[in-house]
Length: 196
Image (cartoon, rainbow, N blue to C red; front, side, top):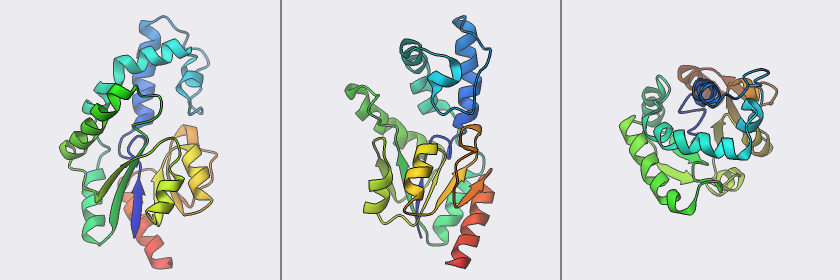
């Protein structure tokens, strides 16, 4: 099976990163922490940030997050198992999004490759997408996508099965399945294989 796997929110615990460092940023910059809304996917809406505050946060944390923040527990181990079982693994990430300055895009590609290697994440192909992952999934004949983004889950889910890595911000999004850990993903993939 050809599996599409997201980085932020699937290979990493992006939700935990935002809760930890977003609240720290608010504290250090005297931004209100009343009514933080972690059901939102947009950081500006979660933390009550202006565009300038949003840029300031990511200027401070982006490259630290991209190089130092760890992979989720058991991610590398489960990917090894899936690879041995014959699955083809496509890492599909929006890390090179339109919001990243042009001069940083090549640097981010290099950082992502290094991070995957440092965290022992094996894959067959690494694809940097824009905002939409649908065309990439269709072009590469992806059989199943694992993602956390409400937008990706809804868009891609109209055409291929999607497994949602659970987070507060995607609780109301329908998906083929919902998981909370990498071994739960492995079990879900085995179940999916058995009913195909």
